[in-house]
Image (cartoon, rainbow, N blue to C red; front, top):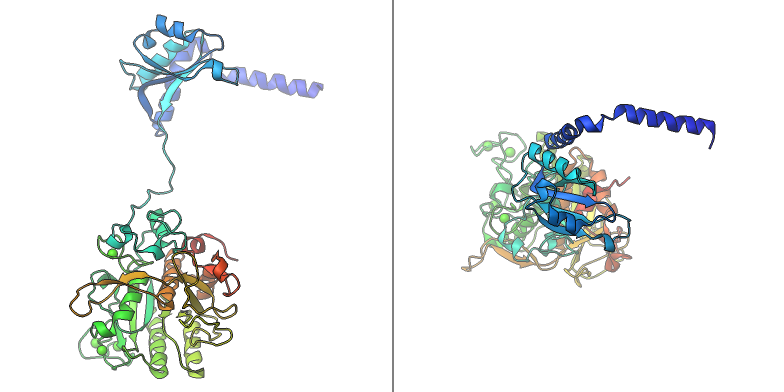
Length: 479
Ligand SMILES: [Ca+2]
Ligand SMILES: [Ca+2]
Ligand SMILES: [Ca+2]
Ligand SMILES: [Ca+2]
């Protein structure tokens, strides 16, 4: 050892001794001061419980029996670790429960001091109360009936109860409670059939156009008189809720995106109460390209005209031939920073070989979505495409909101198709925008695709190679 080292050692020894209080004088006060400081910082100890460490070789049992040291006299004692079973060269460790209690800091300090007077005691300390360390309190599991019953597999994650690793994991986001799961700051265009606007699980999610109240005048000058919830391009009127037979598909999709969660009824969508703007262009027999383009442009214009925070449109439809006019409309949406989420199609075929429009157009704002089932496999009906289908999402046996058909009265039902997979991604876009305000469309798309969970059935036949994982998309850095 060099002189320098010796010098520094003796210096630190000097510093140490000068910083320590003379124990004989201040010991009792010191223990109390330490306990007080801890308690002032929020620490709590179990009333009357002391953890006592005896020195090696101490005859603990005899000492406890003799109870020479007052606080232990009538204590119940439990051996936590016996010396003979220890490898660390220490004596017995016991938990003493003082029957006459020691619930104040003063009483606890006094008990510790008395016990420490026994030369066989190495140390004594309180049994501190410990707790887990969440960032915020976790949110309770949503109380929606079909969430609890196990029917909403598409919303579940690995860690939820009920669980499904192939679900979108949306419920893991709700569970964190990190952000309020109220997406009413986010707007989504539903380019589809109409929506049952008075459905109890959807009424909070239907957009109310404050710029054009119902008064027979086109107050906001967008060319549509009283478009209070959207516009019906099929019938060219302002009613988007034209009965169950022309709202089934649209209502089901609406529920997946933003049905109200934790309201005690029915289902929960990915992004609760995100505002749905209806651009109805289909009836039960479908629609056409011209009305689809009008619907796309209607949503784009609303964003530009009113600065509504419209982040995506959901497009669970397709067919027909190539249309440059539609590509141009989707491009106009892209310029307004609106993602265009599209169902990949239900023919079980390769979109790279046989394109399905609009999902197969090459616009950068399109996210084309395939369907997976609750066992993580590609639905047999789902289209795929290494270059032209982006990601998979739950699309089989999806429980959601429906309008009551015939006289059955059910307002929840199961449906399957890439039509049902697309709204999971649309919901994911919405919840991303809710968590990360002002994110650009391309950033959101990248986050969703790059965080896809690798899934064998989609590895070689989608762009991302996997399935939607919403918490991953929210969490990771994707650049
Ligand atoms: Ca209007
Ligand atoms: Ca009006
Ligand atoms: Ca109508
Ligand atoms: Ca609900």
